Length: 253
Image 1: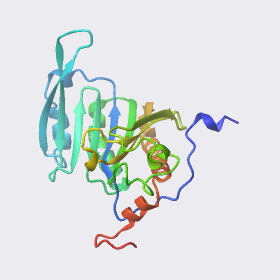
Image 2: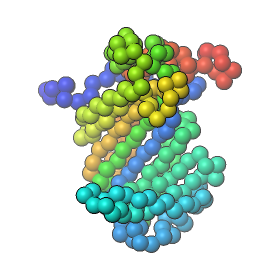
Image 3: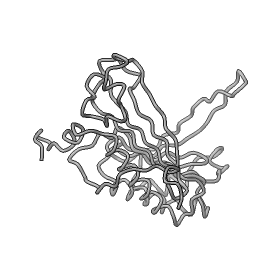
Image 4: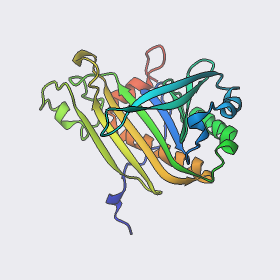
């Protein structure tokens, strides 16, 4: 029997859909062997394939510094947004992604992702994806002095115990494996980009696998989602659950 300590070990949880969630951003990225034409030509075929659901198009050009040089190179990307701007498809020469900051549930998210994959599968023309990743960034609406009951005591002991007072920065990153040939990166802590009084506590989970066969995409994403849910449920406290269980009128179910 393999050493269980080698992989992420989380308590099993029956998945529950709360009345609200704390997700600031959900994103799935699928990488594929580079398509050179996307570096030099407009993605006309992709735009035609996606415009029914994602009619808004924007070309994104970013400047990337070159290591060891004072020069920089330009990287081109493309964004296709839904009519209500709630959903965004990002396209680069070696990847396509779907993201939203108004997440409802995994059924909706995965349904839109699989529709996109179906529309562009013939354009990618590859039997395997070089990398598949599913990332959720949850933002707890509390600062460092208000975390009691919001996060697992094992996760935030120094902050909960007040050992560091009111820190202006606290960020931890953990990497490991989680079965089925996949890995994860879990980051959590205070956002250093806002003032102390506006602090939010972030739970940022990223599950990924490399060299994934097309036919294994659904199974792999289902595995990622299950692991993400277990990790999130382990990381939060009862006050977070109460917050997500409230009805729109503020009452708890």
